[in-house]
Image 1 (spheres, helix red, strand yellow):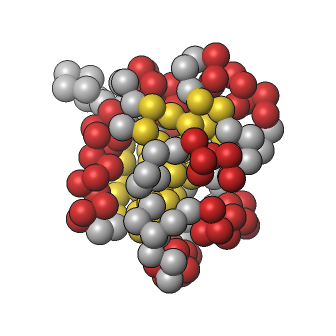
Image 2 (cartoon, rainbow, N blue to C red):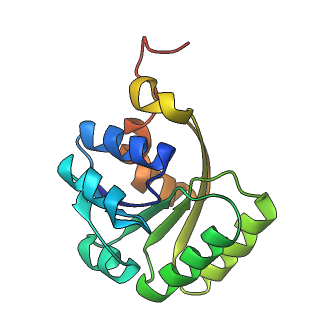
Length: 160
């Protein structure tokens, strides 16, 4: 499966590496190109704008944002609603306030874009031991994304 990853900070970078290691395709975007270039060396496809990210993803597009809660999420959400199409999916992986998620789901829903709130825990150790995911959203959307979700958590025998 292919996913777009926005935000290559400590968690987004390591999640991208884990997804690539697990055989998933990743199109990566970060506001600073150096981090994008770093994951390209590891097998990701680089994107240097939201337009380019959307162009490089297969339809239906799935985009995972790993951004700090607040204005950065809103800015990217507003940009994504302009470049994505009905049937595409946006995942907010940050720890945002649930009422913000409801508002963002409504905003995207007006354009036929699906939204999932998937809180991620695992910190910088997630690359090695896996991530805990807390997903909220539609069942069909969850089922479509399940290959991605199964790549990120700890493997059996690697639970603490």
